Image (cartoon, rainbow, N blue to C red; front, side):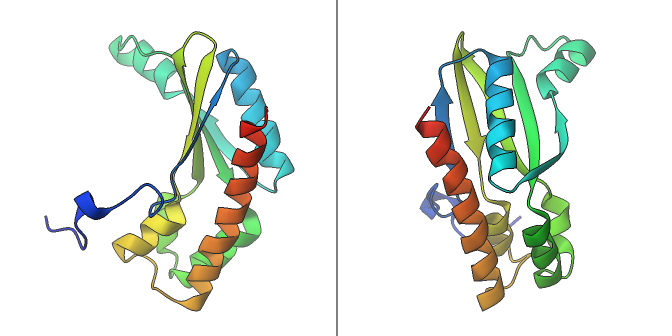
Length: 149
C-alpha cells in the first residue's frame, strides 16, 4: 500500500501529538483527565480499559491502560459535515492514560482531525482548518492544565 506521504517526514506536531506525565496512581490520573476534559468542553461518551480486556481474554499481562473517548459535540458535528461523515470512522478523540511506572501515568493524544486531513479523509478547506484550530485549542488547554499539576 502506498501512503500519500512519506512517514519518515512526519513530525509529532503534524499529527497533533500531545503527551504529559502525571505523578499519581492510575485511577486518580483517569479521574483527573476526565474532569479536565469535561471542564474544557469535551464530553466522554465512551471509556474502556484495553489492558483489563486483554489481560482477561489472552492473559496479556498488560500494565494499566485506559481510553477516554472525548468529544466536543459542536466541533464533531462540524467535522462530520466537512468530511461527508467520513471522520466518524475515527471518532471519538481519544485521551489515553497508561501506567509507565508505579505512580507515573502518561496521558497521550493525537489529533484525529489532523490525521484525517493528512490521509485525505478531510479536504484541505478553510472550514477543516478552522476545525483543526478549534480542537487544537481545546486540547492545548487540557494539556496546559495537566502540565500545571
